[in-house]
Length: 70
Image 1: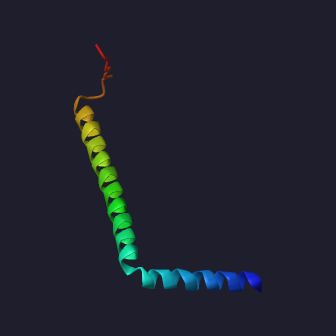
Image 2: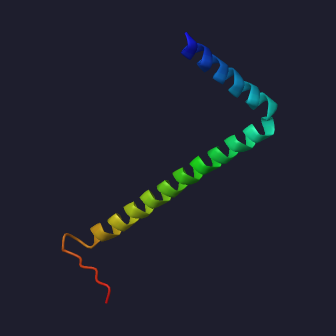
Image 3: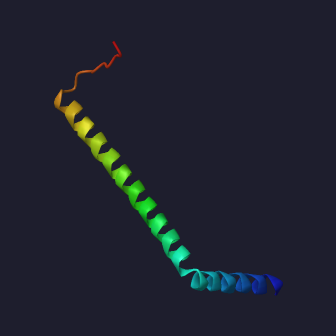
């Protein structure tokens, strides 16, 4: 089972690198976490703004609203 041996050696090497480079591993995880939280925050803000705009347009009634540049 060569595939199993290669897979287990790869995992062992990955854990060895994580242990030997703790600061780099921590900073990488911190960067990924901050990036994910920023994406979630932006998506939440966009959804909130979209709901706000839809609510404002619903207050105008069922009439058609045309928006033009000039």
